Image (cartoon, rainbow, N blue to C red):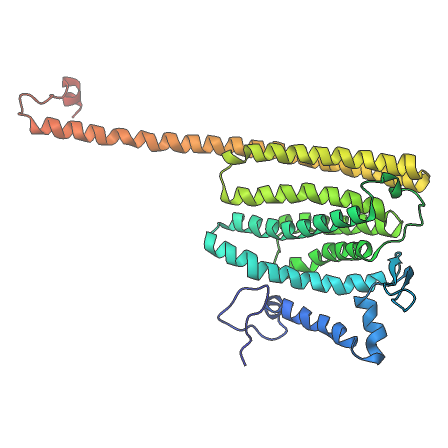
Amino acid sequence: MAIKPGLGRKTSNKNPPILSHEFVIQNHADIISCVAMVFVVGLMNESTAAFASAFISLHHNVSGEDPSREQPYGKAYTYIAGIKDYCAIFFYTLTCIIMHAIIQEFVLDKISKKLHLSKFKLARFNESGQLVAFYLLSFVWGAHVVLKEGYLGQVAQLWEGFPDHPMSFLHKFYFIVQLAYYLHMLPELYFQKIKTKEEQQPKIIHSISGFTLIVLAYTLSFQRLALVLLTLHYFSELLSHVFQLIGVFDREERLAKLRVVNNGVFFLIRFATSVIGVLTLHYGIGGFRSLLALGGLIALQGYLVFSFITEQLRAKREAKKEAKREAKLALQTKKPSKAPKDKVKRKKESDLPEADQSSPSPVKQKLK
């Protein structure tokens, strides 16, 4: 029985051996979907429902009531961080891998086939396309929670009552999905066949650093501050990767104005992040733990600014080198154009009588 191609892979004329590396890569979305369905089916059986719910549902609630006759609408549940959250992170990591494959096959691959992009532009298109989907979802989700909880109108809620900061369902689920997404980047290196060190290193650093920073903020009760700062950060990253996608289709000259907007938003977000961090961690909360967190936050903003400036300078150097190469190519194409003119001149002279043709100089005759 032939194996049909599934999600997140290219079709192949040959069916790879079962359980081989190529088989797992081509069918990884279907395999992981089956694993995820095991947990979903486990909820339907009373004997396994408790075990399966640890991976799918959210736990460690501290308040809230189910609807009853006295309270038809019940009370909203609030949650804190706990050890069972890592079971949920595992399950939603599987979900992120499946969603990654769906976006790749049904959106990005169909668009890239019509565009006929080069290998470099195709890699940039796939990477930015995936990140735009994640950053857009994270920004809209985070902005919704910020507005719903009232953190924008009452900034003092970011530090009042610390560390007793219970989270709403959407607030906690937001962090579970964030941690799951950064964790899913590591197996994606295998599924995407990324083997070179130059391509693996930035993705591994992005995954581990993002997961570590978010899990520290989540477990140390800085969830409210982390939610606001992540929402701001994702807005900046969303614009950056949208402009990268535009750069795949458009010329560099037309991106000059867009880059100015992107640069302005980047520095504005870095400034706003530092101000909110100082207000919350230094003036609002205080203490040794918050000062350590503030030092790490400021160091991170400095690193991001340094990396951004370095990348801009590198891009300018590459643009100058490319301009010089184009200028040299233009000169080389102009030089051969003189040869046809000489041929036409000689042809015209050959049509004249021998007396009217230009005779060679005596020096040239002696040399002959």
